[in-house]
Length: 123
Image (cartoon, rainbow, N blue to C red; front, side, top):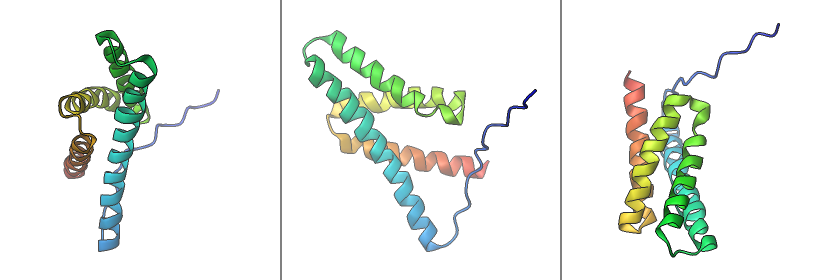
């Protein structure tokens, strides 16, 4: 019988030194910008382009498809992270639909990731 290994721990790194701080900021911002461009522009807008933008059902379908992929991409962190990504992803998608500006979702996502890191580091 093979024993299954434990999932990787979510131990957060300790940041020391200016170089590490700069690298941390760029990584937090980089992930947020990458995810926003992938899930809001490429998948959501690309889906609308391929299906044709007319019709509420198509928008809802593209919304849910992009949201499901965004949530599933966080499954390596556990079920709580998937649920969190689903809820926060829905809010980010609604922000994008309301403003029509990807910069707003990028900055909001970046701020959210940073706050989440600070809160998790203090626990």
